[in-house]
Length: 132
Image 1 (cartoon, rainbow, N blue to C red):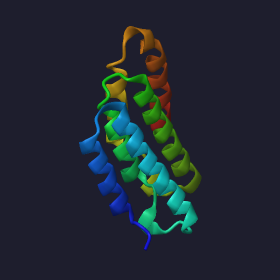
Image 2 (image 1 turned 30 degrees about the horizontal axis):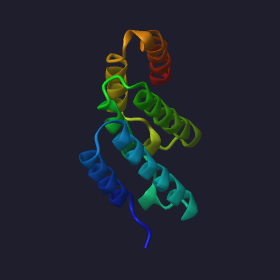
Image 3 (image 1 turned 60 degrees about the vertical axis):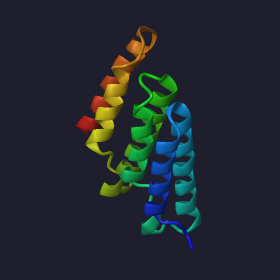
C-alpha cells in the first residue's frame, strides 16, 4: 500500500523532533521530495498530494535555523515551487499559507550583515508575489 500524506507528515514531524538545525531541514526536505516523487509515480492520488501543508513542514523546520542562509534558500525554493504549482493549477491546496511567509520574513530578519542586502531584496520579491 502507498503511504498517505498523513504518514509523510508524521515522519517529517518525527525528523523535526529528532534532528536540529540544517541536518533536520535536509532530512525533512528529502522526505518531502519522496512525497513529490510518489505522487507522480502513483498517478497523482489525492491522498498523497504534496500540498501546502506538506511544504509547511519544510518551511517550519528551516525557520528554526536562525539566519542560516542554506535554510533560507530552502525555504525560498519550496515556497517558489509551491506558488508556481498554485499558479499553474489554481488549486487552493497549493496556495502557500500565510504563516509560511511570516516564518520566511522572520528568518530574513536574523541574517548577518553580509546577507542583509540580499534578504532585503528578497523581501520585496516575496511581497510582490503575495500581492498577486
